[in-house]
Length: 87
Image (cartoon, rainbow, N blue to C red; front, side, top):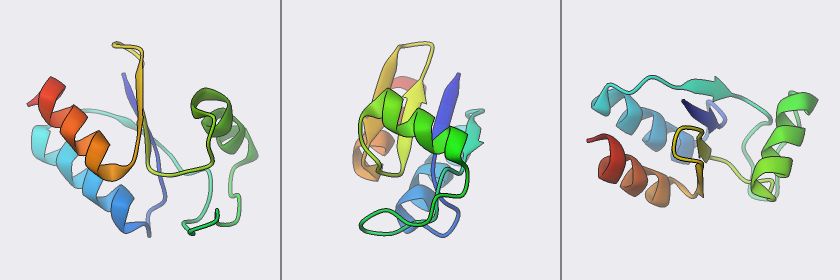
């Protein structure tokens, strides 16, 4: 299962969502906080805690691939990962 921690207004998150849609991959979306260079307002404490516990950073977008036990930050790295494993 793919889980994407993201924010709707974030252009980097949009790039990842577009790639997932292009590839026809199903995924779960989590919206832990608003976008912002130094972390936007937290919208969901539970998801925000998961984001920082799993990845160690308060940064979005963040992809978790539970089937492969892989995680990725940064939209370019996530898009490359998706192309390598899901195209």
